Length: 346
Image 1: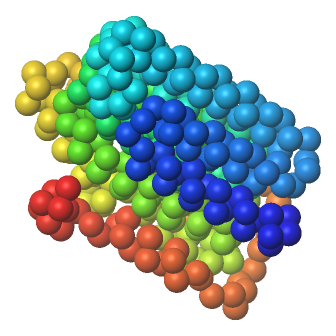
Image 2: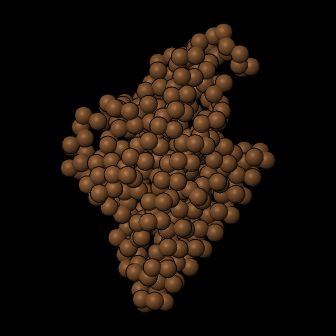
Image 3: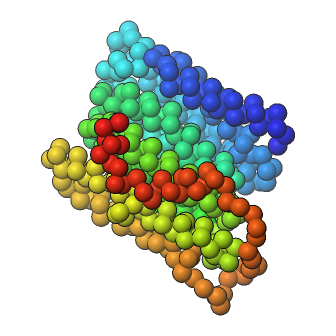
């Protein structure tokens, strides 16, 4: 992909996100989401591999359907109330349609089937954009309309996402698919708390972006696409493999790492809202995700030769690690002690 095309796509991504984040009118928010979708398509399809083209086609069809539903929801609301303001969403039908539309945009269960396939067909950097930047505008729309939304479908989708994200990631061997199911599982945690504490849902999203960026960039620097390749990375970059293991455990939500903070606060808030059964179910379902994170961590650091992987062995190189990876990994391991300060900022 030539630099000019890449520049146009990147600028359009930033423009689309900015329009959606700063708009009060439904049509402007919809236009921003459309610009975003059109800007990411060339980045998904840039390798010209049939799997990439298939991923771009699936992404386009799902996002187009979700955008149409968002427009349909806002039109129903405008028809009932005479308002196009995003925060004035009062019609129950349009609230339900909007919940389904944004769930499709994000890849929440039961609208999650497209996400692992699209991520598998993309490069690691495009996968990082799909898992983080592309989810920010829809999450913002959820945040702005959180007071109007019906909690029942949200809680149902959240528990379903946490269950399916953990369950379907168990048997995967491709790192991108594992991270896709990890993303679905984390979206469940954000969605369950959205109505009760929107700021906490946003904090969870920010920390999820931090941790996921650290994992994706680490895998990209070692060019690791499968578990069999991950088993041999320790010979190339032993320190980075050890840091990857800790980052994965942080993504799983183990104390005393950063990833424990959002899970702890969400369970605490759910208990305050007299939703102890939901909190218990979410905590138990996170054990499924923990299993495949441990499997990744095991492959990254504890597997030593001889083993039966048909993969060429990689040796030490003098290539230095990207400073951004070092910063993100450090942040994903050490932010828990300063959680009181983080909470005052949020």
